[in-house]
Image 1 (cartoon, rainbow, N blue to C red):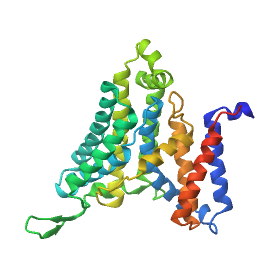
Image 2: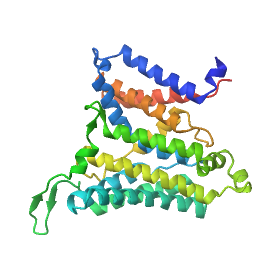
Image 3: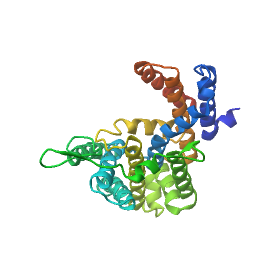
Image 4: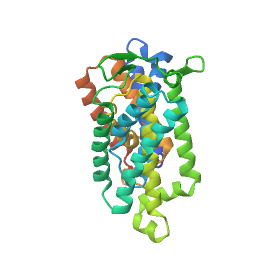
Length: 324
């Protein structure tokens, strides 16, 4: 049994099964057994899961990214401006949003890789800057279909079709598009970690950065890749958030970085770096998603949900520790 529990994937799976069992016991008069409950849970958790995928890349290299929530908000505003207010075509709006997020990630990565700044400080600074920039470009208001002209009058425009497509359900309405997108991100980054040289470099840096540097690992370049990928994932989540909310909110994504970190840790990726992967992050996303959904369908108030969530996260992390 100890040998079985020594594997992070086994412990993460047991944690997920434990949460799922709680849902079966406290099923809110059968609501938990409805496919609609699981479909909605996947839709809600996928946005956090995409953020967590980028966070996993950074944590594997023994880093941290506190800016993902603020970058999500900035991209949400930027994408809405590009598509709703400026009338850019879908491909240009999406490309612009992805570029904004990736540049933010590369900015943080550059501070860390080239100046030796601590990841906590660098990404905390970016978190503050990106949130301020989101408020600056949006004028402190939400970017909606109502466009205000210089004379004070308002013009209401149609919502671009790309919003409906991203927020759609496919496969007969049984699964949200964003869920498929999340699974594709998990697959793409999982394959990158397994088969690309830069993926293996992340594990080497997280295991021992000094030894990796002496072995010829391009530490600076690899850190840029990690933080750039985190910014890209934040951008994807920001575009999805804007589409689901049908607006760009400069306050979007507040505290999302904490949920992303919790997902990574509950999945079993080590905060010290060097151990973990995308499949563990997938398990962590499902665990957090089901936990939130169970509390929601049982009408647990916000204070109780926050306290229970904190206790469950502590319990799950303690459970993830290697047995003696």
